[in-house]
Structures are given as C-alpha cells and as structure tokens.
Image (cartoon, rainbow, N blue to C red):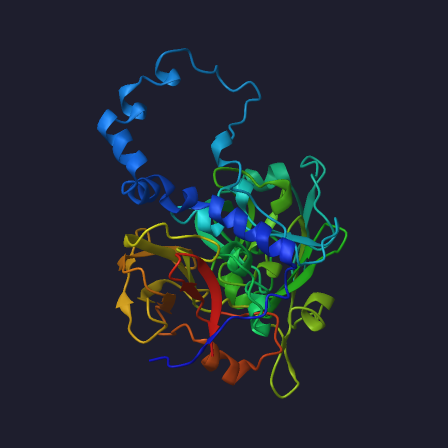
Length: 443
C-alpha cells in the first residue's frame, strides 16, 4: 500500500516551449489514443453529430477515391517506408539535453509502438563520437589476449559461420535518469525511450574465442573495443560469454544492422546496459582481470549515498512502464480503456506484472502477451473502465528470480538521490479529470 503524496515534479528539464512541443508530439502518437472511436463517442451527444448520424456516415456510404482508381506502383526507391499519416511516429532528441553531432541520444516512441519489436528505424540511439557508415569489405574483427592463436576475421568470414537469431531488449544505463532528480519529463518517450527490442543475428562470441584457442581456464573477462572515434571499450564478465548468450551480431530485424546501430558489427550482451553492447566492434581481448576503461571507471558508475561509486554495474534490473495511457496523451471520454505497457528484466523472464489505478493502494494482475522470452521485452495489458475521476496509473513487474520492481521510496533508501544510472523505480502517470495524462512521482 502506498500512502505517499503526489509530487508534480519541477519541469526544469525542458523550457516552456519544449514542454508544449513534447506534449503536442505525444498527443499525435498512438493514433491520438484511439481518436476515431472516442472522438466519435464524444461527438455523439452533439446536435451536429446526431444530424450526421441520421443522414449516414459518408465514409461508409460514399465510395472512397482509393476504391475507384489506380493505386501507386511498386516503390521506386526499393525500400519500403511508413505511411505519410504516421510521419509523427519518430525518434526524437530531447529539447532539454545538450545535443552535438558527436555525442547525442534519440528516444524511441514507445507510446506509439505495438507488440515487443522496435522497428529498426525507430530504435533509440546513443552516440559517443557520432555514427559511421563503414565499408563492410574493409572492416576487420580481431580476437587476442589469452588465446593460442590471435585471429582476424573479415565480415565475409564471420558470415560464413553458423549463426543464431534471438530477441533481446537493449536499455541505456541512463534510461529514466532524469527522474532521479524528481524532474518530470512529459512523455513516455522521454522518460523510458532509451529502450528498444530487436531480433539480433550473429555468431556466439564463445565460438570465436574457441576458434582462437582461448584459455578458458584462465579467462575471467573480455574487453570489447569499438571502432568509432571514442574507441568505446567495456569489460564483459566471462561468465556471460560462456553461457553462449553474447553475440557478435551483424543482423537486426531480418536485415543488416543500421549504421546508427553499429553497422557492420556490434556486440550483443543480453540483460546488460547498452553501453556494453559495443558498436562498430573491432576487437575482443581475453584477460584475467577487468580493464577499468574510462567508460567504466569515471563514467557509467553509480554514486551511492555514502559517497562511494559502484563500479562495473551492468545488469538492468526488472522494470516496467505503462505506455498507454501515458504522459502527454489525453483520454477523450470516460469508459473502457486497455491499459498496456512493457516489462523487462536483465536476469531472465518476466513472470508477472501488476497494475494499479489508485497510486499503488490496490493492484490487479495484468495479462502477459505471448511470446514471453528471456531478457526480452514483454507486452502486458489490463482492462480498465475510467469513471472520469482523477487516477494514478502504475505498473510493477516481477521476474523469474522473484525480484520485484521497487517504488521510489524503496529505491532511494538503497541508492540515494544523486544517481544518474540504473533507475528501475515504478513510474506513475496521473490521469486528471480533464483526461490529460501527466508524469508525477509518489513520495
């Protein structure tokens, strides 16, 4: 039971113009939140609507243009694109973050997506030194360190090896980072949008280490090094590699990786924060101790309440978010709604998601939609009849290890309030009597 007060967090993350822009974008997402059905229902009580109904709906009675003429030919550019009516569904940079070409982030429009797979063109981006479109014929991948025979692979050689395809989520360690400081970014896209899920195809890293004769008895860690200007390097525990889950991937959602997602080669480390999924992968070094690279010694560390830094944090703990209804959206009339969202855990499968419409006082078990896979997004839903009164929507996920997603009081009791990374607290959306949905925190 949660009896904490509602805090409308200060919106100093965005200026006034940015808030209006983000709210407008959200209202256009998710089909204006079933705008056709609810707009029709809301309009049904007006005299004009009654008159229109008496005459009949012209969209039914009059044959539309697309049923009377020739359509467009096969796409001339050879690559399919979304409908022009879906142009608002796109990745967005936050108006409140410093953006440069070299170090930047864009957020996936979670509130406008269905199922669990993120289209490649909407996958969130995080760049430390800009993205590159590398010529795959010139790209090389090396394995060295504690190995009998150091190896260098071309892309052709890698793609001739037996491959596997698996669905996994990837989440930036800083996802939901602004909320640590009680800062209310307005939409789900900005609170949780550094999250995506894809089918990845590639070669298990353990296979490549075995080909190089890695000393698996001495090996405790591997170092992954990227080929972009930041030379992103991350230490990966060997236990994850031995499991066979870690992939050297070239495929995403049935096609080659996109350049902004690491083309032609990236590391896939299921359940681990996105910075360890090194893009433009060029080298794996096998060793017996962690490397303390710059992005794991002074960046991507957790500041704890006693002033110490928690280093080598990696696993993304169990987490969830309601994507509809969510911040920036508007409920156009009281009545039936399907609350839906996403849940995930870096430790395995999601076992249960509970949903509350009264700020955590009461919980109901949501439906989990198939498929439910390990270290993958899981879609959940719950039927809800809104009575037109204010409501606070929350979701709480539990994974197969028994771990339960914490609320902010529980998380801050352990982690304090000065962190940036690894915020997996319960998200709250306030549905106002007007139908507007806003981001709030319970404290």
